[in-house]
Image (cartoon, rainbow, N blue to C red; front, top):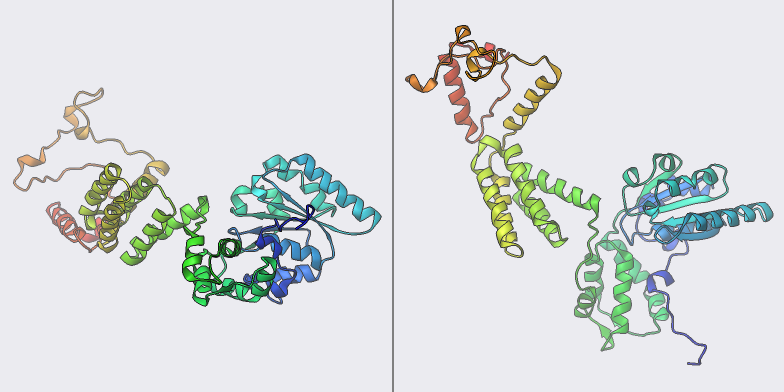
Length: 430
């Protein structure tokens, strides 16, 4: 190697970036013939596109393909380290190219959610007048992180994590180019490539990075499953704000659906991704009251105990405590009657005239108390520890226990008290 020869410094994933739709793997819902994205590109009729999706799913590659397909200049910026002045400089170059050569320019801004509102709004004028064909890429939800004005002017496409079959197909198809690019004749075990495809979390860039590392650190002529497993190290998780809430939602809905296996899986997923164990414990306590309720009052007791134990013990043993609470709650009888009761009562408090507190229920020491309007009768002085006495002044039944679990007994008790009051069912349900 001479003084002026340099080894390849560009990452393998960048070297193998697809040239067109023919060698773009995955995202068939966007790139298939007849899809909206393909039609808008083939008819050259788009002005602004936003790609959203996890890392390594092809957002930058699609932007590059679009610029080539439409024969446009391609300017790529990253919102992480680009200022408004750099954006204006790119727009000026695009305007000059359009005026002097008639060429269109695709302005690609990666991590567009990193731009603040003013920076995003600075693009609007040039998108509208056609100075640039804007393409933004983000790993976040555009509805939350991008301005409404930018979203309204854009076609928004969501890219999904690549299926293992798509990553495996990509590795097989590009293996000759991979070997040429890395200047090697090493071979890969088929089971190793299968393992990598299944465990890179749908991230093609990560798969290629692992391949590159395995080749550069190879100690034999064949790269084995163990070699790729070692290079992969810890699985990569996309666990941003969206993933946090989505995982929590799946976790709660699995417990609500009485599926302990699914609930434990999502528990393990959150733990492995580094979720705060106190957050998980709080969600279990809320679930125990909201979704199990009085169908099994022990669920809340167990959830509170688990929360306290988790705080004392910490990880990794806290996983066992959380699993016990999760499996108990998932398999417990369910009732949201207490949850519905307080919501109905709150609705009446907020939207109807406030009820006057009956005189016999007021504190005798309070101003305005008049014992002549009625005395409070102490229920424990009666045989049944129950007396017929008004407590609210309206006939409303907020709490309606279900016939599951312990609430079956609660319902029987309420029916018994109703009989003592001499009320019939039709009046109670009105």
